Image (cartoon, rainbow, N blue to C red; front, side):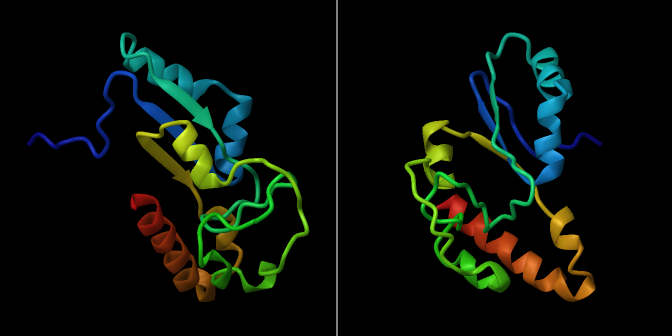
Length: 138
């Protein structure tokens, strides 16, 4: 039985990786990018890794960004972090970066950090991820 791929990679696709340390550690190795270019040698793929350790789907602090929240309302999922960081700067928001990079495909590496909340944190993690996906699809 033939199964359709979950993600269709087209020529000139812009693929953006976001997430926490799993995605961030991929910056140290070129395996993913190499494999993608080998599988699609004539497609001129653009691949950008925007992952950073400790990021969640809704909380993405950066010293050059005014807000640590990836989308409006994200602060309700990380209540212990829901405070103004006092950061200043002009580093783009997560949405601005995805737009600037003209992301066609977004690969998210979230869940490991959140796993330390144990089973009691699962519903909050799922709700935060769901809110991020719905926001991003807009």
